[in-house]
Image (cartoon, rainbow, N blue to C red; front, side, top):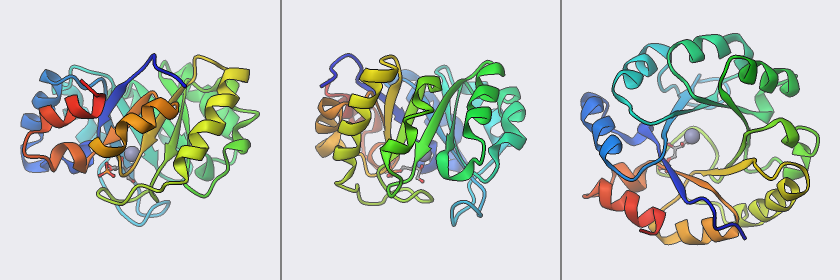
Length: 219
Ligand code: DX5
Ligand code: ZN
């Protein structure tokens, strides 16, 4: 059980790209903590989203940290360029990094917070020898690639395992959950051990996004 953090990182993947400035300013005014920015390469995941030029413009208006989730193969090639366009937190998939320790070290040397991401089928136990170096771990609670999918129930058990691993090895490591988060499952995710919840469609698909952000945070 972890009651210290109840943070939310709205995913801009579900924002209106034709009105991105408006949606960013809504998040600035809201109780949200970070901006979640999903980068997809069409190879690691079956979808393409956007890259550095768009992030540069997001940074121009965003008044909260950019939490950049890289769903791309060999992210090492682009770490410095994501720093340059304003990423504050950079997360990379365990499944996409042959030398994850080197990648995490590179992200931190570049001055960003570093996190490892696990797909739904990847066991938490595989983080045993890297969690001490991570500022955060992101557990995917859907298969990455698309917004608006259904939350995978097995994620609760993975949060419990990760929470006990971080208590042993790195208590300051944050746990972030991404995919299918909504008002109905948010409080259970926080009480199970999550610190940061990503929410795309539950925020931007709501008639009142600012209220949805408050409700997900339990305010
Ligand atoms: C999915 C992305 C998510 C996505 C979540 O691959 O990593 O961040 O935007 O969308 P929802 O909250 O709608 O499941
Ligand atoms: Zn994401």
